[in-house]
Image (cartoon, helix red, strand yellow):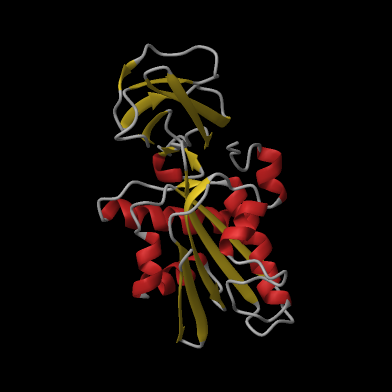
Length: 265
């Protein structure tokens, strides 16, 4: 399996990239509840900020948005802490694992393609995104059309050389076609949402559900849907099923529906 690595210093911070080519090959949404979100609000706000900026850039370049994936996020968070604690700005972790083995052990399987961006020293999501975007090789990862899912992790280590470390992981899995609500925004004040549905070239039919029990009728596959969520404030789920012959695949995404704030008069 080939690995490409590229490293550069910019504004005193190190950036690195690695990409694994096609190789061997439970979706969990996050955060699932207001309790989980509030418990680590600052952290997840930064994660979603990076993801939303990445997806905005992809959409502006004619590419589909990426789905935030729990396993990729867990692996990214662990790796950010690992490189900070060991002062090793490398894509090989302290256990000697390269990206492919590490993500496999974090249960991101069966993967088809993987990638990773690394950065250190940037204090905001905007700064780390701009550093990656202004680096041709890191931008190539963010705009790679084969990727369908993304994870972001960060670690603040005040006693370490760079103080803060960021990891952005990318992937696509075999026989897995995610859905992405509103370009993977964390929250919305509108019941009506836009949904991107992966599966082009495979899926023949599509249907959706808000509860996983009551389904719309099967319709010809399209990669764009507009769906009205339930009126209940809080985390809303959307379920999708795709069909090709006798084979059916499913996917799910969530978004936090906030009650719209009334305008002052």
